[in-house]
Amino acid sequence: DVKVTQSSRYLVKRTGEKVFLECVQDMDHENMFWYRQDPGLGLRLIYFSYDVKMKEKGDIPEGYSVSREKKERFSLILESASTNQTSMYLCASTTVSSYEQYFGPGTRLTVT
Amino acid sequence: DQQVKQNSPSLSVQEGRISILNCDYTNSMFDYFLWYKKYPAEGPTFLISISSIKDKNEDGRFTVFLNKSAKHLSLHIVPSQPGDSAVYFCAASDNAGNMLTFGGGTRLMVKP
Image (cartoon, rainbow over all chains, first blue to last red; front, side):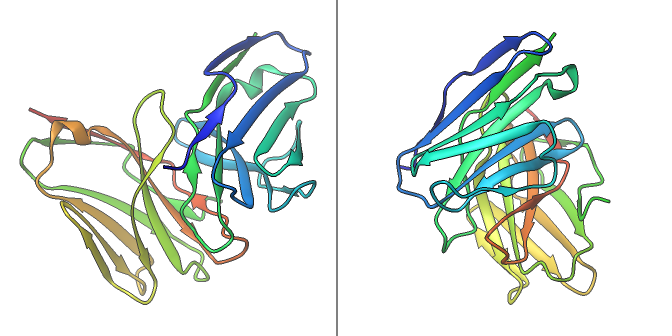
């Protein structure tokens, strides 16, 4: 079974703090994704990576950055957290030949 | 503008009856469609998919129908069970780096 894990299930941070969200997958998948989920808006793509040290902007990259130093690990960084970044953050991975993405359990981030 | 829309934010169905969840899309380049199911505090899990070369795909109680001319797909669940209560997302891909575009989700409640 594919397993995608995320470092925290719940996080509370203050405005202006730097926030790190980590994601690890154990299936040697090439592609990894970060989404945020907000009510009525579905899942919106923040960044994705198709290889180590490679990254591409998704639909809503502003205020975020990412890092992929190892194939199995993909980190999302909020450089200076703001209240409008309060959301559920979901990490996913897949192989290059598949459309089916496997998701982690999500991190509920609250910025106060 | 959202390229994938789920116009019903919620749906309530009696146990044993049929649940029909709908999804519309605007991008004619989309050629693969997926449905995901999400329970609270968990990541989305893949349910069923369909390629644009087909108009129907069945897996047990779940059937997805695709009407390309109308740019519309639907998920049928028969018979519905209380354990099917979740948020359902439809997603579409245009084969560009196997990225997915998600709809806003429909919350299904199956009443015993």
